[in-house]
Every structure is written in C-alpha cells, then in structure tokens.
Amino acid sequence: MFNWLLLLPYARLLVLPFASVDGLSIVLLFLIIISAVLTIRFCLKAERKSKADNKILTKTKAELCVKNQVATDLGNKLTERNKELRQKSKELLQKTILLEKQTLELLHKNTVLKQQEEQILRLNVLLEIDHFPTIVTAFKHPVKLIDDDLEHFAKQFAEKESCYKFLADVKWQAGYHCKKCNNTNYCNGKNPFNRRCTKCTYEESVLCQTIFENNRIPIQKAFYLLYLIYCYKGNISSHQLSEKLGIRQSTCWTYASKIKKIMEERKKELKWLDKNGWSKLVLTSNVALKQ
Image 1 (tube, rainbow, N blue to C red):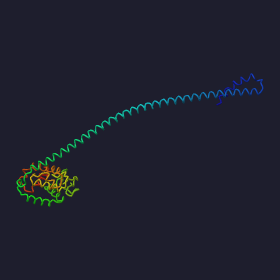
Image 2 (image 1 turned 120 degrees about the vertical axis):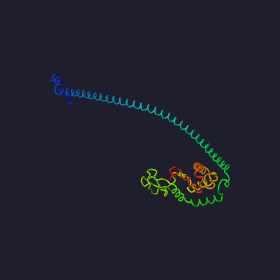
Image 3 (image 1 turned 120 degrees about the horizontal axis):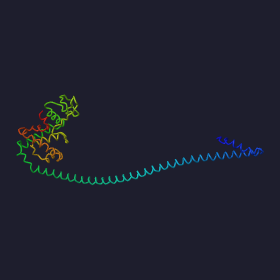
Image 4 (image 1 turned 90 degrees about the vertical axis):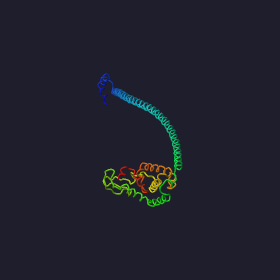
C-alpha cells in the first residue's frame, strides 16, 4: 500500500534542481509525482487483476471442456444404450409373437385332445354296454338279492362318519403304529378319525393307504361305487354307475378302472369270499394288508 514511499529519495533528487523555485511549483511537482505513482499502482493492480481473470477464465474454459467431453461421452453411451434397448425390444416382440403362436397351437392341440378324449370315453361306454353280460347269468345271486344287499349297504353307510369309522377299524385293526417313529400312542387329529402320534405329532389320514386316498367325490358315493363293482364282479359299465350315483361318467370310469385292477390282482383272495369280501379291497398298502 505504501510502496510509493520508496520513490521519495528519487523525488528528492528531482526537487534539488528546483530548489530556487517557489513553494507553489514544489507543490505542483509533488502532486505530479503522486499522480504518477498512483497511476503506476493502478496499472500494476489492473495487470494483476487481468492475470487473475485470465487464470479464472482459463480454468473455467478447461472445466467447460471437461463437462462438454463428459456430456458428449454420456450422450454417446445413451445413444448406444437406446440402440441396445430398441434391439432387445424387437427381439422381445418377436419372442412374444412366437409364444402367442405356440400358445394358439397348444390351445388347438388341447382342444383336439379333449375331443379325442370324449370320443374315447364314448367308445368305452359303447364297448362296456356291448360287452355287459346278463346279470342273471353272470352272478350266483339273483338280481333281487343284490338289490336288497345294496339297499342295506346304502343304509349302513349313509353318513360319512360311519364310512370313516369303518375305514379306521379296518386300517388299524392290528393296532396303531406311527409311520414316522413307530410309536403306538395316538390322539385324534383334525378329522376325528385321523390319528396323530403323541410323540412326533405326525398325523395320518384315515384315507391314507386306502383305495379312497385322494378321493374327490363324497365318501358315501365312493363306498357305494366300490360295493356296486364288487357285487357285480366288475361287470357294470361306467355309464350305469353314473346313472345310479349321479356322478360324471368319466369319473366313474376312472374309479371303476382302479377298482377293477385291484380286483384282478386279488382275484384268488376274493374267489371264496361272500358279499362282505369288498372290505378286502379297501386297503392298498402291503403293510396295511399284513396288519
């Protein structure tokens, strides 16, 4: 700030030649010197400011260049990404169209298969009717006796509780043994006729390992269907079962096929049994049969 004071010795040298000049001239001379010093100081300050501004401007330009470069790179990347996304969108669209075509083909095939299944079921009905022998000649007992037995059976198992109780008695006639831990103590499960192990808490359904496992029709009708097929020695069509039980013919055919297969496997065992021999068809597990 006071750098101009350094110029005072030089100013004195300039004043000496004018020592004889009056005081007003000296004052003017000093004013000129001070003005020159201030001008030089202002020029130096302006130069420093200009240099600082140039540095800031240079730095700003550099930052702008970097930002522009980053923006350019991001723009290029976005462009490439958009191209990739458009390409993937096209591929997905093509795959979607292909899947739709395949779905339509599958629907068409399923329709054809359903039609073929219905035709097969109709053929099965016709074959069963054509090969259905006369009841009088096919059985030892007359029709009236079979009808009386069926009526008695229907009354005996009119309620699902009586059906479940019968299954429980047959299934665990040799005593209860847990399938998981072989424990012999049990309590009732969610269904009163299910048995839950008191040790490992495993609950076994009364329908498990019986011919009625995974049953989808009322248990009373399932019992009656089994008894009908047994009484007629398997010589009853699914069409007739459907009429008697009020169940779809395809469902009757499925159940009848399962029961007839077991009857064929156990025909030696069933040969000398009376009308109550149907209970021998209830259990499907070898372990259960041994019990």
